[in-house]
Amino acid sequence: MTHLVSQTGGARRRFLLSLAALCMAPMARAAELLTFDGLYKSNTVLGLKFADRTLALKGQTVRLRGYMAPPLKPESNFFVLTHEPVAICPFCSSDAEWPVDIVVIYASKTVIPTNFSERIEVEGTLEVGSFIDPKTGFVSQLRLRDSVFHKL
Image (cartoon, rainbow, N blue to C red; front, side, top):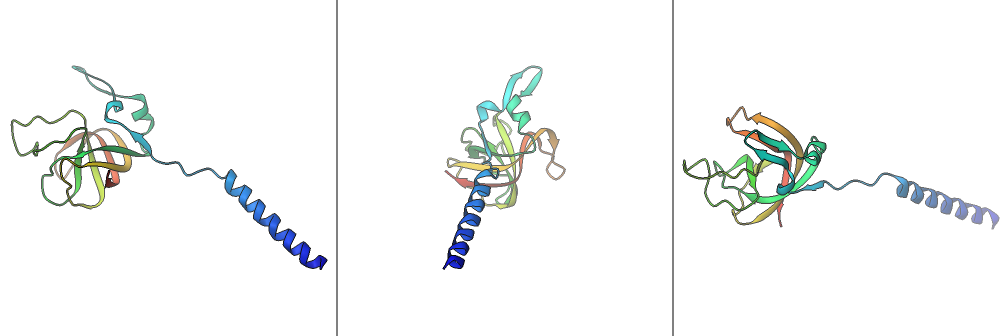
């Protein structure tokens, strides 16, 4: 009987120690949510200045909510996320006004476009600074790489 009690007590101790170790382990951090309003500190004739928080999150996984702009082609591995819905492809019309607050999204797989008025949330690795895409020549200031998205 004492042998059975000691086995039960030992199992209980191991369980409690395991539970304590789990509680003390660092919690997996959820990706930080960025907002379009918080991406830049200023936008003047001297150019864009990134917000301190944007710079601090460079290279980290972040989330951003917005709208998928109409793509250049039906299926590709990137798209442009805008703060407000954009009904026409800015690349397809010379007089279209391209919004200042955009982020280029490089998806982890081929993107099937959503309706331009559907709000989405994108999660990916934040890149900050001027970049020229070698395939398209598109210039961007902010990008999310290896991104996934879902409709809100």
